[in-house]
Length: 210
Ligand code: B12
Image (cartoon, rainbow, N blue to C red):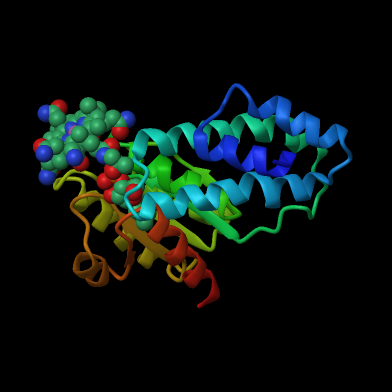
């Protein structure tokens, strides 16, 4: 097995204690950092995404893969040149006001990052005003919002309404997710919906292209 395949497998298997050494080994062998990223780490992450979609991998495994990706990136990042990473787009992401659930949102962020998006994660319990201000500040392609409680769907609605009121933010594409969300609610709000993290990547890619 070559070193790139080993790195891809590290991501898939969540080998967070091994990957740093393997990435270093690849760098020492003279492999270009971008090749290590594309043909090693991201290749592994794509398989993680597919297997998660198929129900072959579950949340804890995906979180281990995410942590492994972070460990590998620590070694790789200083070696990557500007322009090595093609940015798929920029996304501001938040769990809305009143809601502290963030496991699903983190998973979505991780998969989007793996697909090349630059993510500004505002955290949990984020007010509509703070989300609007961040959208003004970062001028993202998309704003993503997560809610897990029936009650916090209302904060989501308030946030969408606030974004639509402001000339600077009214045209920013919005995607929402979380247990109480569904396609009908999203359409009613003027937003887009996806059910899970891998579908969120497909949705984000299509929104950026639209
Ligand atoms: C873990 C958990 C907690 C943890 C959260 C820890 C954390 N850091 O996130 C803790 C213990 C803190 C918690 C607290 C509470 N919880 Co809770 N919690 C859960 C639980 C068990 C799992 C949620 C989860 O992480 N799922 C795994 C992730 C991977 O899935 P996911 O979140 O759905 O995310 C996926 C998709 O929804 C989608 N997605 C998510 N966000 C986004 C965003 C975008 C943009 C897109 C595109 C997609 C997307 O992609 C994700 C990945 O595939 C659920 C039950 C359940 N089975 O859902 C209850 C649940 C959500 N909680 C519930 C409740 C009631 C509460 C509390 C009110 C309990 C209490 N009385 O204190 C508090 C509320 C705290 C608050 N203010 O937010 C209820 C909500 C009921 C309702 N209809 O309102 C649930 C449904 C449990 C139940 N059956 O009663 N909870």
